[in-house]
Length: 443
Ligand code: SF4
Image (cartoon, rainbow, N blue to C red; front, top):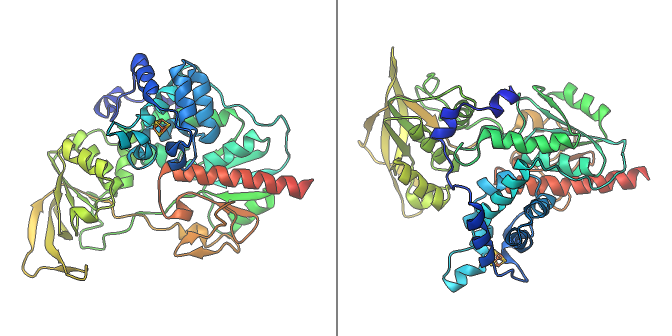
């Protein structure tokens, strides 16, 4: 399946063309020469993985793209995908000193992508950090960014690493859950090939759940890293929710990314106003929906989506209905026909209350809930002596170690759902800490 998807259908690629087109070579050099190479580099401090931004930009300016990419990868093994999916406006580019001179910030994300695209096009490989072959074995649960970063770090230091994931492809949300116009599925898989090439083993289609699986894992491996992400999307808990025309946002994104959904007809309602809701709404529009409306109970000021995501959705033609609560989904023999909504208002104390007699209906053929994911409690509660707080794994921030010293954790199952780059930073930090622990324990 992986090879099949690496030669993805051209119509998907066409419809989901780049949100930010790549730099041409000359434009990249011009842009990189604008960088002031700041000594204290606030852009680097703002990056959760602390990529040395001025250093890699200087290398692009001097034409040393391979070395620029190696510098990026040294800090962030998913440098290619982060170049495309990071909210740079609130991270590195948001911190760029150019803002202080009323100049456009340096386009760090696009420059990073330029270096990484070159690296991949030239068949670049990740270097090893040690020639030592260590016998200790580490299992990573989940094949998303946190596990990939931990696995790469440990493998580069010579340890034996195996990643387990219930899905048939690695990458977690990078592969299945990020809008195609931000990160094509093929690019996510291409990046993971670098980690495979290091010798990290993948056991895909294998779900680790239940005391037996974990007990087997504990017996076979010296350390277990939990990078399992989050669980299913929250349910709407309204009449009509179980209709087949209701598809949660992550499933919807996965379906079109893997070619299961290639077009949509009719009117689409997306419920929720986070970044995933916007990814799904934009995708529905690009897949041919007649109209796409996002329903949100509160107002523009309350949404969790980044401002640039919101503006992007407006550009795509997505309509926002504020102060609107979904109450029921109606259907006939041919499918969903409409949704029933209620207007809401916000009290002076900030609480939300429904407005009497304000019910209205909207025609609709597909409903996409995007109201957040729940913790992966089925798995997490089975991890022996691993402390949880509000469904999140409690870890030592500096190392990622849990209350059971054999278990480490990072990414969404720890932070409740943040950016890919945060998961990579967690995974790398844990990888370094696990390596230290094993070195001390086995000397
Ligand atoms: Fe270059 Fe801006 Fe970073 Fe300064 S803050 S090093 S100008 S990218």
